[in-house]
Length: 297
Length: 285
Image 1: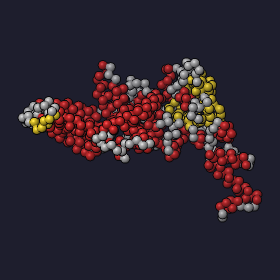
Image 2: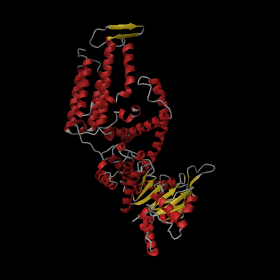
Image 3: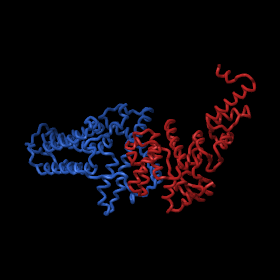
Image 4: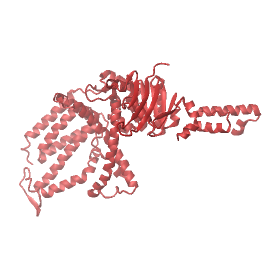
């Protein structure tokens, strides 16, 4: 495996470190994010997932431990700008992160801050708007867009910095289902084209999008692995009062009745295939067409 | 229910897409024209002068292709205030302002209140002057994107940067303020609806019951401020995350080039302004 692009080493963080009894929002976090990853961090409100995300681009600096981004320490003031250009971030509320009153000018805000010359600035804005499929709206006023569109503009604004990593801090939580799907589609495209994604969410079905999932609780990482590994521990997640994706829940309930049924299915397609396979199998063994029985043919 | 819809009522600050000659003028030219006409406006106290200036402003509005109905609808929220001021001028300023170009005539007097042809002239002239400013400002904002206005101000302030005028920052503050106007209008609607759904009474208390309306505003402004601060904190993070470090070294995506039309417009306005100023004491009424 290649070098990690983000390395979190023994990080603890407190918002009030000088208090008598500092409360730690993060405790002893160790984490590596590799180029091309689609990492999903799930957890409750107050589990520290957003706090952790803000460490990735030096918005917060660890109270103890270190965060390394592409070989740069976030504690080094000289590295702050290059780090923020390496790790783009999209926040929760679409309206609160759009600075300009015209879409393309907002997308240009990041690279303009870095002093990117005019021609390249234009090229980057074009590219970023195209990648989130918003280039038809470049002259629009942001307040006339839907929230899904606004959030895609925000993604374009982050991508215009040409970051290697894109952090989405609950970026879909304020959107309607259609807007959420638009945003997820854009993110999938970005990931396919090589951008590392770190997505923070409390929608479990979005966690399935990733290749790695991290579950946080009370400032610690309590579970991690592929979505399949993590969500097969239905009981653990329930103990943390976290949902599992509905499909996984169904698979798990079926597994409890019939332990040959796999408990770690993640998508609707998977579960449909599994049930079809079983129906066909039964048909072959029992000589009775359950498939026909159910469809009435 | 239309009381809730602020977005529709605020015409100043709303950009209206279009392709008129006014739309295409360089924003710096538009601001210069605005400044010239505002100066002229503040010097002219006669009927004739104001009719001329108002016609000039109306001509500009016609050129922009923006409907008067849309423009005038923006005055509606300010109407009670305008009426109060007009009444006060009418009744209390009769002796303070001798009429321009006419013999002073008193029509009615009761104690300290009086109506003279001076106060009537004052009311009419004030209304015209108000309309002129109102047309000019709404014209600027409805034909120019707010970002362009901000960039234009920035570009016009650039020569003063040596005197440590933070042109970039001023322009960014302006843009952000304007960017959040519709958001806060929307937020205000939400708060009003939330309060109305719990029995607050916004629908009634007509246009002129401003005491009642003002009292209602207080309960809106506090939550609105809280919301504004929360948004500001979010915005700071978002700007930090996008490498904002202040105005220094920023590049721009928008560049302006003054065309001949722009210069012509400025020249016309300047000539018009100077003529009106020179002859301002020679108009018959």
